[in-house]
Image 1 (tube, rainbow, N blue to C red):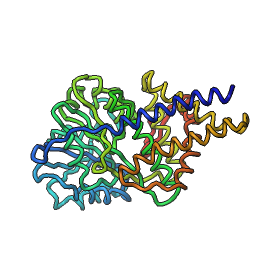
Image 2: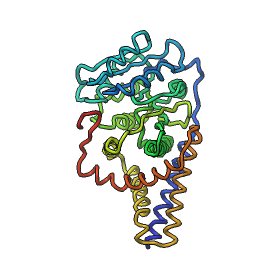
Image 3: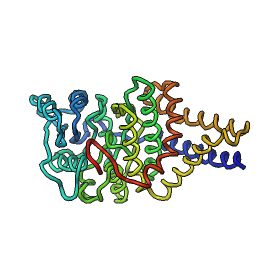
Length: 363
C-alpha cells in the first residue's frame, strides 16, 4: 500500500515538474533597442553597509540607452553606515538619487513603504526592483525592458546565489528550483510566486491597483503585487528564462537567517489559492514518502526514492545549464536533504505562529 501511495504521489509530482519546465522554457517576443522605454530601478537598503557597494557598482555598470535610466536607492532608516556609503558612491553620478522615508504612506511599513516612497517620485515607464545584497548582470535592465510589448505589464527574472561553499550552493539550487516553479506557473497564466530582487512592472499598471498602499500589508510584497496585477485581467505577465536578466544574491550566512527567510516566504505563501495548495500538497506527500521509506522498506520504495532524486536533479540542472551556471553535485545532495526537511517542517512552523523577523523588525 505504501509503495502505491508513493508511486501515485511521485507520478503527479513528476507531471508537475514537467509542466513547470515546459512553462519556464516558453519564449517571448522582444522589442528593438531603439524602442526601449524609460525605466526606474528601485533598490531598498536597510543596514546593508557590507553589501550595498557591490550592488551600486553593478547598477552603475548597466548597459542602457543614455537618458532613459533612473536609479533610486532608498535608505530604509538604516542604523549603520548604509546611508553614507550610498551618498558617497552616487555624489557624481546623475542617474542615481537617494531618499530616506520620513513617514509611512498609509498603512505601509518596512520595505514595502520604502519601495512605495521611491515609486511615487519615479519617472520611468517601467519599474525594476532588486535588493541591496544583490549584484545584477550588465545586461539585466536591458533584457527585462526588452520584453515590454504593449500588452505586457510584468516581467520576472531568475536569481541565483553566491556559491562559495556547500551551504551557499544548497541555497542557490533552492532558489533556482522555486523560481522555475514560479516561471512555469506564471507562463501558464497561473501566477503563484515571484521574487522581488529580480522583477519589473509597468508603473501605470501599478497605479491602476492603487500602488502598494492599495493592497493589504504582506511580508511578501512582491507576491502581493503580482497577484493584484494578475487580477486586472488586462495585461500579460511573463517570466522568461533568460541569462541576460540574471541576478546574483548573497546567500543567508547562517541557519537562523535562513529559518526566518523560509518562514517569511511560508507566511506569504499561505495566500495561495486551491491550485497552489494542491501543488504544495503533492510535493509534501512525495517528500514525506522519502522520509518514511526506511520504515516501509522495499526495493520498490527505494527505486522510487532514487527516481525522485533524479527528477529533482534534472529539473534544476536544465535551468542551470540555460543560465550558464555550474551546479555542484555536493551542493545538490545537500539541497535534496534540506529540501525534504524544510518542506515537511514548514507547515508546523508557519501555522501556529505567523510572526516574522525581517531586517531587524518584527512583523
